[in-house]
Image 1: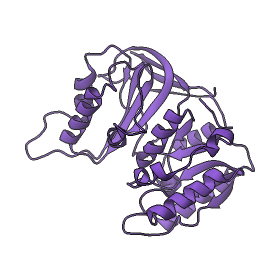
Image 2 (image 1 turned 30 degrees about the vertical axis):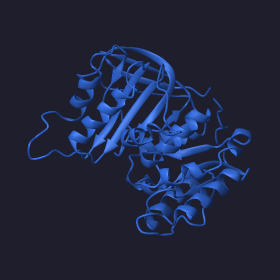
Image 3 (image 1 turned 90 degrees about the horizontal axis):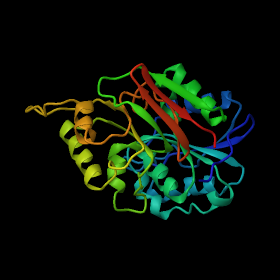
Image 4 (image 1 turned 135 degrees about the horizontal axis):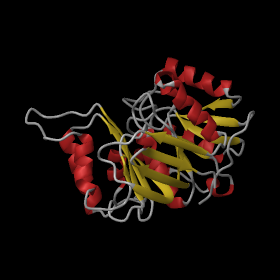
Length: 300
């Protein structure tokens, strides 16, 4: 796995929008946060563009990202927001410069497509909050992101959950938005999860959609041979008039209860005010115990 250099004060970072059009005021506020960390920020030409629901045309969004990938001065690329649109351009991207000049790709939600694709290429990335939503985060989440991108070894402990399954798992960590993971099955971004620590999150889905996606993961063999499984936040979930009969965590648990790997629910990652960044493709250790759950992220 190729691991980009962690950031230091004075480094130049890029801002691009690969999916839904952005909120300009909140994005500018997020850029100021990055500048406050001592980073020089280069904003993509089309970040504030608009084409229907997208931040510019497919070609414009692709050009912005490709310029940042090609620019050797850029040490990290922060995606502004998710929504939908990244998979429309992913096959047109040339990621080869990252093999000789690796840099962090940072973002979550729809940006999961890039994390999975880079994981397959053997390049680490960072599943993280995005600048247009920095304003809505708890300060602890922003501080965690700062410390992570600047290269600190990180560990985080949360309370135990009644559906947790105890044990210790080590392996590379991968995953992200459940809808996008399902969307990439059968493509070049489809990931092999064997012996990996998988993490999942999502927002605004119907409960029966969630069940259907878990069935798809299971049928595709992505849940069988994990080292461990982390369940993040499943926010703003919806039910039908005829209730599905279980909440999000219960649905997920029902699809993995036959396995024996460590399982941790309610990790603070996803579409919530507590959204902790994770280094995708790098080694991690997950310890699930009666007293709580600890995730340790390593720099190498």
